[in-house]
Image (tube, rainbow, N blue to C red; front, side):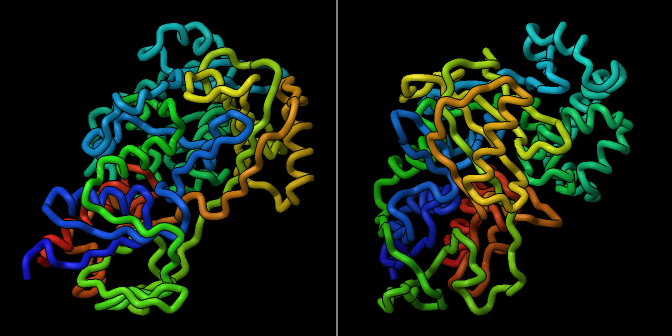
Length: 412
């Protein structure tokens, strides 16, 4: 059989599935992507509501991700960069801290901010230097501990942990006890230090859109739900059977394949609420943190502080809630509006949209940066992709998609 004649299917049109298709196409193959929803992107999607761009959850692209540099045309995404710092709302005051080595305008506010000690600020520089010198393979082979114990071992004060590290990284890890692996902390911290945190001008969906627009020989089957996958076929929920020589599963595989480890993947969840406001209380493109112990709000960001394709008429504020304390939607919205007023002095004109995202990030242990193509192989013809295989990041989703495709190619 000629290479081109093989029937190769990818289940899931998220970032990982799109990268797998990209690698297969580069090697002369014409895969078919089966996607349960109406568009590409998986967990990376953007809706247009009332003239505003709303990402499904507050997400950013870290430009230092090696896989992003390899597979994305970053320039074409028209990336809008955040300032490398944060605005912290504490005791009725707003204080800005950041990396003055990368943005000189942050120097005075960082030195004089009553967030942590002067010693903490020097330790942050020390941590930056340490991680600059540490390779990604070293980071992912270092013994794991929790992020909290890592920061304490680095001798940071409780003040800087509680008021900066906890709210900042809780918004990334989507858990507020900093129990996430220290490998993930070092990796993310290094990526923040070596590049920009940015949003594409067209919202996060611009990333999967770019990847799918570059595919020329891939066929998409949207609104098509897969029930199960075996070595020779894919069975859809409606009973239809599709012959497949090789299948890459770029989504949660547990429900689709009998041979997969049946251990349930746990997920971090979050709520993202978008509000329209009359003005901004943070004038620069800085993330706002609320370190108050009883607050449900973790972080806030004015999307209108960055340039975007669609702007709406007023200011667009997103609020991330990591632990919604099981509040029903209406009570959570009320609580968030009360806290915005109480802690930040923000009056909200109206709620644009409330996203409850139960499967935001996989909870993983023994995090890996990379895998061999052979390690993605589940059976002779089934291969696994998705960030679940490595670590919960866009970079990992891309690498896992690439390695699964290379696994198929090796088998051919």
